[in-house]
Amino acid sequence: MRALEGEATARRTPAPGASTIAIVTDAWFPQVNGVVRTLSTTCEMLRAGGHVVHVIAPDRFRSIPCPTYPEIRLALAPPGAIRHRLAAIAPDAIHIATEGPLGLAARRYCLGVGKPFTTAFHTRFPDYLARRTGLPAGAFWPYIRWFHRPSETIMVATESIRGELREQGLTNLHHWGRGVDTACFTPDAPPPSAFEGLERPIQLYVGRVAVEKNIEAFLANGYPGSKVVVGEGPARADLARRFPEAHFLGPRSGRELAGCYAGADVFVFPSRTDTFGLVMIEALACGTPVAAFPVPGPMDILTDDCGAVSDDLDRAIAAALYCDRSRCAAYGETFGWDAATAQFVEGLAIQAHP
Image 1 (cartoon, helix red, strand yellow):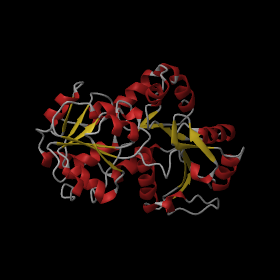
Image 2 (spheres, rainbow, N blue to C red):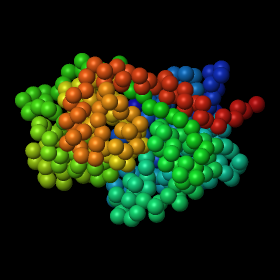
Image 3 (cartoon, rainbow, N blue to C red):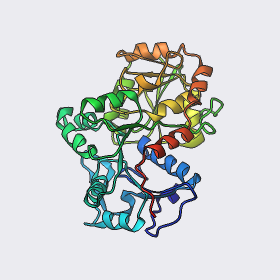
Image 4 (cartoon, helix red, strand yellow):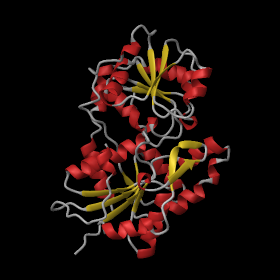
């Protein structure tokens, strides 16, 4: 994936009918999360369609650990660095993916030169920051409103999040869905050897092992069976100590990750702060039903045929186990990256150069 990180300053010519697109993001490799996977896959799809894509990300600058989350690096771009790069690229469209330091610098450049830009609301940051700081979520909404208001369009993945942003006075919204690699995530993916001998049902969590993911609610649920965590993050050591009966497999990717999904009996999504939850549709594509809380993301994605939601996670797990796995897989296959990428392009504020 490292090829995606290249960001040249010389202007290249896109294919006929395509555009030069600059994507500015504070979330990028080596981070492993839904935002990075969404952006990297979108870049691949855009390039395959003939677009020229420049990614401006933290790997290009000196950085410091994010307070309370040291595995995330905050870029310290020199004054004017983002301005100079964007001016040299001269893109037809600028998309600001995140609200961090690089996103702020790109926003400042666009407003300063009168260049239209788009943004995305990937994470429910007010709730995310509330979990990490102990402050009320309302304390962070003024920044979110200020950051996104000048955007030509704010790209969002679900109707629940659109409603939440409308309540905050942000109405310039555009749907940008998500996809799954249906060649990789299939029901016949071989399960990992670590699943052998585990008590059924195997309950699986995949994602960042961090406080905002609410993994404790998953590990503390009383439903019988085995609990498996796939992923890495700052909360792993503490959770492994407090829940010694759980199985922590570390990060997995590709076909190995697909095997974890396919070999599990139910996928548990305990997060209350995600805007979508890419892992849910990956699990579904592998034929595994999903149990979750009734919050944005699960409420937008899950149907009665493929999962269950409840404020009582035990009840959600019990109900999800009755779902037909073939229907889960069929539904998961409907989430394609081609359609999601087309939605992304439709939402861009493209200004072709003469």
